[in-house]
Image (cartoon, rainbow, N blue to C red; front, top):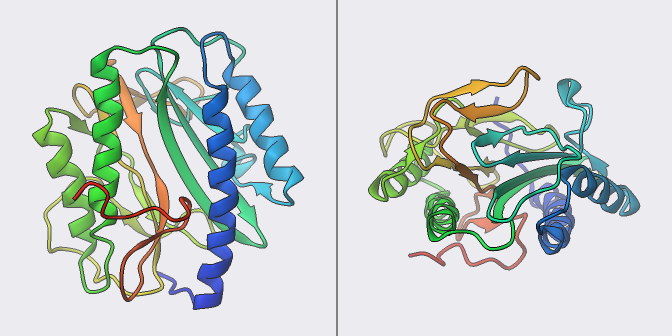
Length: 256
C-alpha cells in the first residue's frame, strides 16, 4: 500500500534527510587512498547516533553494518572491510537513518583519489540519470516516467541499467510501496500524487546489467565485472517542484 504523507510528516523526513546529507558530505571528505571502508562505517554510525538518530541499515534483515560500501564491480550492499582503498577505485556509499521515527535513504559514488576519465564519466552520467528521473516525480505523472528517464539517459551514453535492483517508497519504513524500477516505458504505472515519498536510485554499469549475489548473501556484483555507479536521494512529490529531501536546497532541474 502506498502511503501519502502529510505536510508535517514530510517535514520530519526533511529533517532526517538534512542529517543524512551532513553525514554523506563528511564521508566524502574522508575518501582517499589508504582509507578503509570499515573506518567510514564507524564514522557514519557515530555521526548518526550522536545526532540522536538510528542507522536504519544496521540489523535490517540481518545486515551487519551502518553503511553499504560497494567497490568497483560491486553494485550495492557491499560489506565494509579493513582492506585499504586504492588510487583510482570507484566507491559507492549507501546509508540510511531514522530520525524521530522517519526514514531517509541516500547513496553516492566517488573516485578514490585520481580516477581515469571513464570512471568519472560513469559517476557523472549516473548522477544525471537521477536528476532527470527526479524531475519526473511530479503530481500527475506516472511512475514509469521516472523509470524511463533513467534508462533513456544511461543507454544513450552506452551504459547498462541494473534491472534486478530498484528504488522504493519510503516513510516510517525504509522500503514501502511502490517499487521504483530504473527501466521501462514512460506513461505507465501508478499515478504520482503529492505526499508520495520515493527513494530514486539509479545503478548504472559500464557494461551489461546482469548481476549475481556474493557468498555473503548480500553484495550484488555485475556478472561481467564491469564497474558500477550508484546515486540515490529521497524525493517528495509535491503540488509543484519535486523536493529532494536528502539534499537540502538542491535544484531538481539542474541537468535540464
